[in-house]
Length: 605
Image (cartoon, rainbow, N blue to C red; front, side, top):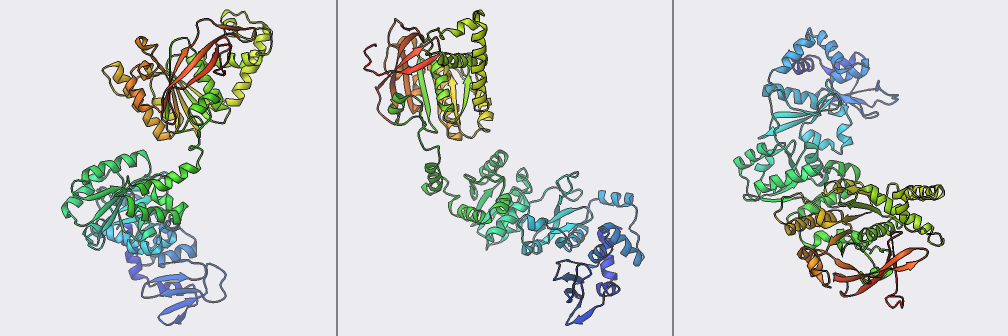
C-alpha cells in the first residue's frame, strides 16, 4: 500500500476527537471542542478542534493540523514515525522501504496524484516556505498547494479543466533535484485554464510557478507558468488548441540572459496570432519577479501595474522618462575632464558617457603615449580604465607608464631623467636610478592596483567580461585597424565597420565613454578633414568627436630636463557637442612619454 493510501486510511478510521481526547481534557463549545494547548504555556483554552474538518488549531501558538500532525508534535517524532505508530493502531503495515521505492517507480494514476496532493495540502501550515516567498494563505488554498513532510518538499498541483492532473515537487533538501514531476510525467504548464477564462483579458506568462503566484499575490492577476522557460512547446500546444481570443499576453521571464533570449523566442512564436509583449526589466536589479516581491513589495506592485500599461509600447517616450531622470542625477551625465584644458574646452567639458572618441595619428606622434596619459588623468579622478592593446604587449605598455612617472619625478633635476627607457633596454641605468625607478613603479601599482586593466589581443570578447565587474569604467583601444571583429568580413573597410559596431554595442550597453586610436590614410596625410581617417565612413557617422594628431614641426625643441620635444597639433574634424576646425596644441616629450599643453600663441612655436 502506498504512503498516501495509508494516510487516507488512518484519517478515515481514527477520529481526531477520540484520539486527542486521550491526551487532553476536552470541553465542547458549539460544534467545536476546546482545551489547554499542550504545545505552549496556556492558561485559557486556546486549542480548538473541528470534528467536521478533522482538524485542530491553537490560536495561541499557531500550531495546527490533522491527527497525524498532533501525533508528530505530541510525541516529537517525524512524519514517517507518526504514520507508522497510527497505522499499527488500526492494523495496517507501512511496508518495507524497498516496497515503497518499488511503488514509487510505477507511474502514478490520477487518483493517486489527487490523494497525494490532498494529503500534502493538509500539511501546508507546517512550513513557512510559502510565507517566506510572499505567497498568502488564500492562494495556498486556491491552488491546493501543500507540504510533503516525509520528503521535505513543497507540492504545487497542476490543474486542467478544474481537475488536478499532476504536480511539481520543489525539494527543500540540497542533495535532491530542485524540481521533480510525478514518475512518468513531463513538465506541464501551470494554470492554463486561464486561456479559457473570458473574464481574464490580461495574461502574464512566467517561467516558474512561484513567479506566477507572485504576480497574482501582488496585483490579483492570475498568471501562467511554463515550469521552465525551455518548456515552450507544451504551452504552445495548449494555446493553439484553445486559441483564446481578446487576450493580451505579457511575457515576464527571469531577469537574465537566458530569460531574455527565451522571452524573445516565445514572442516570435506567438506574435503572428496573438497580442503579445515582452515585459522589460530596465532598472530592476532582481533575478526574477518573486525575488522582487520579497525585497520590495510596493515597488514590485508598481512594476507589474506599469507592465500592464506600457509593455505593448516599449519605445514610447514615457518608458524612458524615469530612466532619464536617474541618468540626469547620476555621475554618468556629467562630462568627464580629460585632464587637458584645451581639449575639455573643445568638447564642452570633456568625455561623455555613451560616446565614442577617435584620435587619428600619423606614425611617431606619440598616439599610444597620449592614450596612456589620458588613462592616467582618469585614474586620478577615480575612474577604472580598461586598455585594450592590439599592438603592444603589456610589458611595453607598463614600461612606458613607469618611465613617464620616473621622468616626471626627475623633471626638475638637471640630470637627464629622459631616455630612461633606453637605459633599461641597454642595462646602463645605475643602481640608484633602478632603485628610484622601482620605488616609482611600486607607488603607481599601489595607487591603481585594481583601477587599471590591460588586455592584449585583437578581439573585444574579453572586454565584456572585464567591464561587467567594474563600477566606473572607461574603455581605451589602441588601435582600431588591428582589431578583428567577431563576424566574418571581406574587406578592410568592412572589418573596421564591424569593429565600430561592436564598440557602439559596448558603449551603449555599459553607458561609458570609449576612446580609440585610428591610423590615417597615407594618401590623405595632409588633409585636414575626416577623409584623412582610414575607412573614414564609420568614423564620420559613428563618433562623437574625432581629432587628427599631426607633428607641426620637423625640428625638435631640446630641453635639458625633458629631452627633445615636438609640437603636436590636434585638429578637431568631427564634434557632436561643439564646433569643428579648432586646433589644440601640445608638446610631446618622447624621452619621458609625456604630453603638455601649450598656448597656441606661444612664441616658441
